[in-house]
Image 1 (spheres, rainbow, N blue to C red):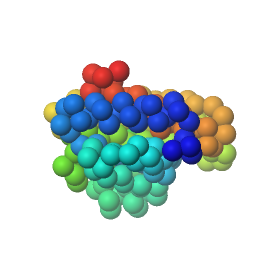
Image 2: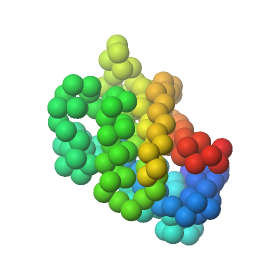
Image 3: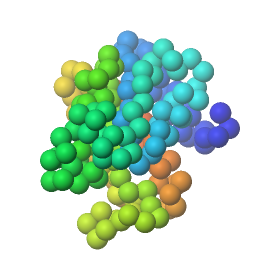
Image 4: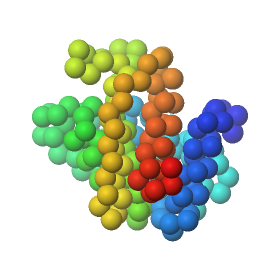
Length: 166
């Protein structure tokens, strides 16, 4: 567990505890983090009773095939958008028995940014089986690793928020 900072591991433990208390499973759909959220959560022993699956849908075609996101949505709004983040979360939720899904899509850098979506722009969406939703657009700074870690930590904070376990 030394791979991750204690702040991230503490968040993961809290997410697992909140899901256990509610008797629900967690699923992730990750683009810019490439599975980092799932890696942090599964660094905690016993996480298998809560963490159902992690979809790493880095490319647009993976988003389309694995999470059934319409290509027209990606063309219209771009992969880094609120609409695609929500579609990823909903797709992951529909493809699993989980009760809560978190999705992230963004620009981790160092390249790939634009004037409208600079490096560090990340959309995070959380959806519950009961229909509750939460979204944040973040502008993180730092290098690629820093942006990815900040994204993972914020994603876990939003899971806690939507579950009322902040």
